[in-house]
Length: 61
Image (cartoon, rainbow, N blue to C red; front, side, top):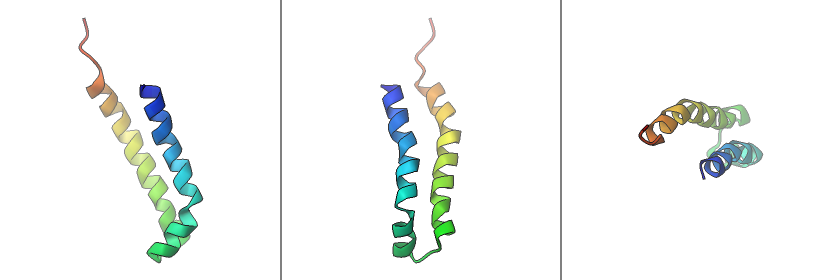
């Protein structure tokens, strides 16, 4: 279940990369500025994944 969730969240960054031109035009920003969405998402995911994993770990016997 955890692997499926990780796959779903991981592919999210690739999906948004395909729609960046649309996001940039609708928000009236440049394409590099809209591309920072992928960077911010990836950093937040990389920083929160170990913390979330540790919190979800069950009690050790």
